[in-house]
Every structure is written in C-alpha cells, then in structure tokens.
Amino acid sequence: MEFLLDYGLFLAKIVTFVIALMIVISVIVGGSKKSKQGSEKGYLEITPLNKQFDELKEAMKLATVSDAGQKLEQKKLQKEKKKQLAEDKRALKKSDASSSTVKSKVFVLKFDGNMSASAVTNLREEITAILTQATIQDEVVVRLESAGGMVHGYGLASSQLDRLKKMNIPLTVCVDKVAASGGYMMACVADKILAAPFAIIGSIGVVAQMPNFNKILKKNDVDFELLTAGEHKRTLTMFGENTDKGREKFVEELEETHRLFKEYVSSRRPQIDIDRIATGEIWYGSNALNMALVDEIKTSDEYLVSKIESSDVFEVCYVLKKKLHQKLGIAAEESADRLLIKWWQRLTQDSNKHI
Image (cartoon, one colour):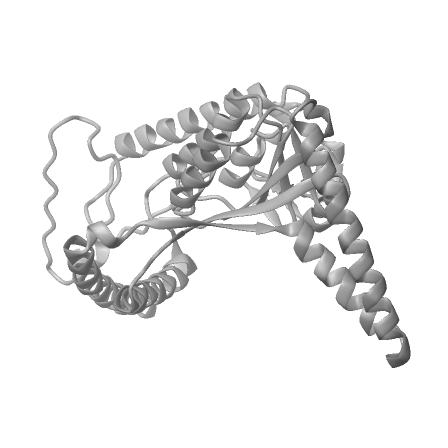
C-alpha cells in the first residue's frame, strides 16, 4: 500500500511537470498565433481519385509486359486517352442540353478522431465547401476512424454530417478499423454504413473515471479547498473529499447522457434493437451486420473503386497553413499530450464524460 501511495505521488509529479511544459509551449505558440492571425488561412486540397486510379492501373499494366511490348502498350494507352478525352468533350457539350449525361460526383472525406474530436475543425470547412457544389445526384463518403471521446466534440462532428442529410445529399460512412462510441454517433447519421469484417463497431455507452488524491494530500498535511457557487457546480473532485451525494449526482448525469445517446442512435437507425445494443459492448463488423449496426461488409477501398467506374470521385481535404515554428510547437505539444495520456490512462481518465 505504501508503494502504491508513493507511486501515485511520483506519477502526480510527472503529470504536473508535463502539464507545466504544455502550458509553456501553448503560451509560446499562442503568442505567435495572435501576432499572425491574418496569415493563418486554410486551403482545400482536392485530389481526383479517378486519375490516381488510372495512373496506378497504367503503371501496373506497363510493369507486367515485356520490354519489347512496353512501347506498343504506351501507344495503345495514348490512343485510349485521346479517345476518352474526345468522349468527355462530347458529353460536356451535351450536358448543356441534358443533365442526365453528366457523371455524378462522389466527394471523399477522411475523419481520424481523437479524444477531443479535433478533426471537426477541418470537417466543418470540408462540408461547407462540398455543399456549394453537391447535388442530390452526388454522394459524400466519409472514411471514419474513431474510438470515441468527448461528448460535445463528437456531438458537433455528428451535427456537421447532419448538414449533408438536411440538404438531401446521400451520405455513406466507411469503417475500416473502428467506429465506437462517439465514432458510432457520427456513423449512424449516414444513409449507409459499410464496415470491414473485423472493424470494431458499437460501444453505445458513457464512461467517466477519475483518480482522487485526497488521502495522499492528507498524509502529507496538504490542505485543499474548492469553492463553488451552485449546489452541483462540482460533483466530484480529484483532490477534495468526495461525498455519496456528489457521486449520485454524477451517475445521474451519466445516465442522462446515455439516454440522449440512445435516443440519437434510435432516431437515425430505427431498425436496431436499442436496448440490446446500448450496453457499451462492441461488435466486429460481421456480427455488427447481424445486429443492424451496419448495412454491408465492405472496405472503403472496395467501395470507392466500384464508384470510380461510374462517377467522378474527389478526395476533399481542408489544410491549415502553419509556419515552421508553429509546426515545431504543435509537434512538441502533441508529444507531451501523448505522454500525458499514455501514463494517465494506465490508472484513469479525467472526470469529463466520454462516449
């Protein structure tokens, strides 16, 4: 027991040092941001995936023929390109008279979620850009990977996807690895959810954990005071002495968050048995299909290749410009953040609710 207390105190010192380091870095980076706010504008990177796919196909074709046949194959490819270009021009002219000859467009987004769902900053810009061009004949595909995180962050990310639904733009979410908890909150907005066979799906629950160092502080004769206005301003604390009343209120808040989460999923996927799947459990893709959590077992690559044959497919990515000193500062901050999370999660997570 003595060892655990000493270890806890040692860990607290490490965490304090890391947090202090992060604050210093944030102040330095923040100062540079304030002085150059006007120059920090993002830009869109739009990649035509049809062209990328054709280049891969061409490279493989040339690599798999003999040296003597490569020149003939290159001439053949050049003829095919000229023919395709001529067909595209004719189709473009016809499109003035009839929109039915125009290919539909597929816009591909990528969302890599972390605890705070920080990728929503880019997502909102990408969706705003897409909505200036997309029609109900087009489609948005989101390659989603997230194990969940903060309630408000993933709530906002889900609301951004909902903007597409409100404009009747077909939305497909592809899950190759994981869409759990807050990640599934985003996925369930889609008209169609595709998952790889071993993708992790579900975890419709709410969790909040926190350590309490009150005994360690008492042992070292350290007083801790927490002043609040409002009966439930602070229910649980890391350093004060927690009460049964505070715990009951905190659990009540967790239950309310879980209720809202279940209602949100049910309203978007009424075909599922919400009481059966909202236990916090996870399922692999194949089993998730049986539970109606997903609609089809297929990887994002397989789906997009099939779309390339009939549609113009574009990958859309919003990128924020950063100066060298900003990149270094953010990299240092992220490294410190990862170190903090790595040590902190061995014992606990903070008191914020996570989904």
